[in-house]
Length: 207
Figure: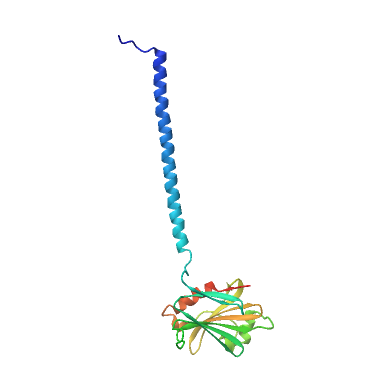
């Protein structure tokens, strides 16, 4: 014959079932949170990997390093570097032509002595035949004027000039030498000028 459960035993069964359901829900919820956390970590890892891949805009570029004058810079893989000397100055031409062709479309880095260690602005004024420095004080001109900047951790000047042609010069002084970056603005219609700015941003002095 069927016998009804004692109220106390029924309450025990009831609360046991409720406890089992609550514990199951809790552990299931914890499992869901772990899965969400793992998925978020996977997404973050993928994003960091993507950022690492994109972090070097100069990947594949070559590096020119000059121990004698203590500097280096990166340049496009399809460019070539030519070294020469004139009137006691070093000339490094970064050329988009071929390794043995006549240099046609290029920008350059000239290195001049600065034995008295004068400021880069004074050197530019005193050596306008080399610096293409505008006559008189630096004032805005049709192509712009003097801009102070920092290049390779040193104070530098950036200015434009015009005459028979149009150009941009960036000069920086370091250890009694003047480093003069030059590019013709006549190349502004192609990527020469853009590459000049990119190469300039990689220029640094080495110990």
